[in-house]
Image (tube, rainbow, N blue to C red; front, side, top):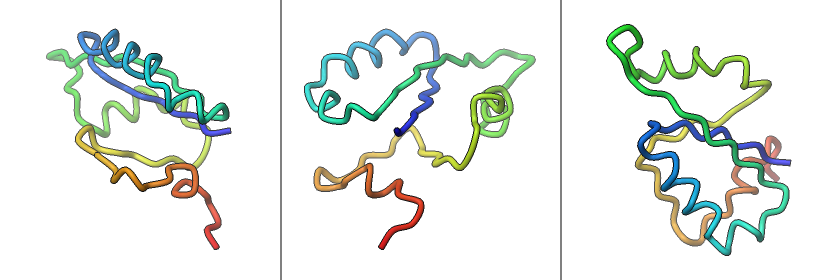
Length: 88
């Protein structure tokens, strides 16, 4: 199984959730589990990458891949094979 923790600002959660749930290709990966969580920057907690990772540290149980918000894989990219820990 592939578990995805997707962190976004609260204002984007509904749109992202709708997009993921309405995309027909998402049903082609039944082993993919996407958990959408929100994180909003405050004066006390800036939204830097390290702060966000620290905030969700208890949710990270093993190796992980961190992708920037503007990551756009080419259409031919096979995400499951990219995540294989022992590629051949």
